[in-house]
Length: 335
Image (cartoon, rainbow, N blue to C red; front, side, top):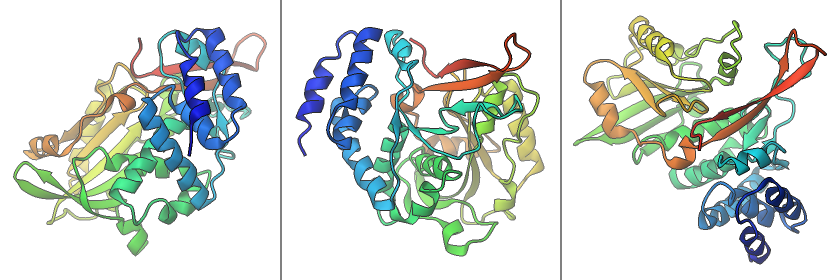
């Protein structure tokens, strides 16, 4: 497929001023095909060749499972781009339960990772799925990806596979056994000179964004992980992988260590914060010599993952003119 129109459009984006960005987005809306629109949008965040390759993957994979992409670029993206930040490119996920129209302030939230997915992350996951689990992706994930309440969890679940160095023999025991005590993934990785079996349970705690807003109500970051590992594994290590949306601070790190002491069948916890520039991008807490083993098995996060930007709209309680709404930008890597 030719992307001549997208190529010409990309060439028009020079200094990224708000006016130029506004014109760019309007021109994208007039592009004839979805692949061309995706290429032009993805090039705002990732290299041209990568954007072109992934756009074709996204279109093909989402068509195969019957997921319709409803693309949105928030107006606030104009300001972000002008300030040197990466632009959030959203696709709408309806009926997730996250909306500013909720009466409870602690639930009146919407935005990236809540009721909108990040198109760049979806494009990366399509590439990961094709590379690591070609017999599973995307058709075996059709139910999860077309379910509004499970879509972002499924994207996050596949993304976590890429955090490990060259995983092989990848299996999905929870799909095979349908047991509540089966983890999401089992695979092998090379830890130094030794092959290591990893049993991985993945969680996405999107409600953790409430810590940014200082809400008292918080969810347990590690809920439902221990039950996936009723016993210690003789053939590998049991790992909980948790995606959170606020800082990995001392309180979270201490809580992680304490949680491990109370759940001896779990060998390690790996935490990733999507939106905190003040957090180390990847933190794991474990016991014994497993720390050195995991160091050999884990991939450092790449620039694409460490420079994400999210936009949230939230209710501002007790504000003159209530109900009033505010917007919040969370960036991993400010300019």
